[in-house]
Amino acid sequence: MQISVDVHNYMETLVGQVLAQPEYTEHFDNDQLADLACLSLNQLRPVYIRHDIDFLATLSEDRLVILKNYAHVAVEAAKTMIVDDRRKLRQDDLPVISSQYRFDEDAELEWFEKPLLPTKSRN
Image 1 (cartoon, rainbow, N blue to C red):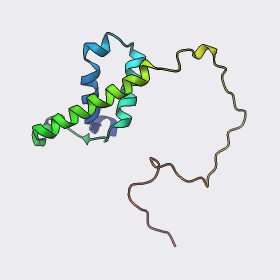
Image 2: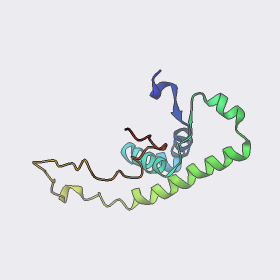
Image 3: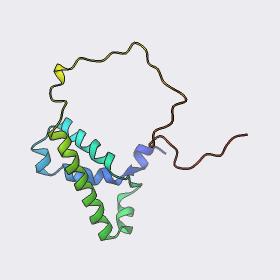
């Protein structure tokens, strides 16, 4: 099994459908569309599935409309970040080069790094 082949996030499909509309393809380049996709998907709860046809067969029409609306709203919110991109003048920025990378092994995990299920303590 390969996760990238056998399992996918259905929200990627819905966000892709929104981004395929002319209002996005005619006004944004490929890099901006990729940024829009990333920013949009980071706002959405993933819906992992194996086969679209099986998923859609069991999904109610009301729920599909809700998921499509979530995707549209997320893309609209991401659009404001791309339109007001503060990276436009990046050539004026100086690169930051660090000669030494320090990582704190004892630092608390971020919310997205924590396991969903608690682990059993080892004795």
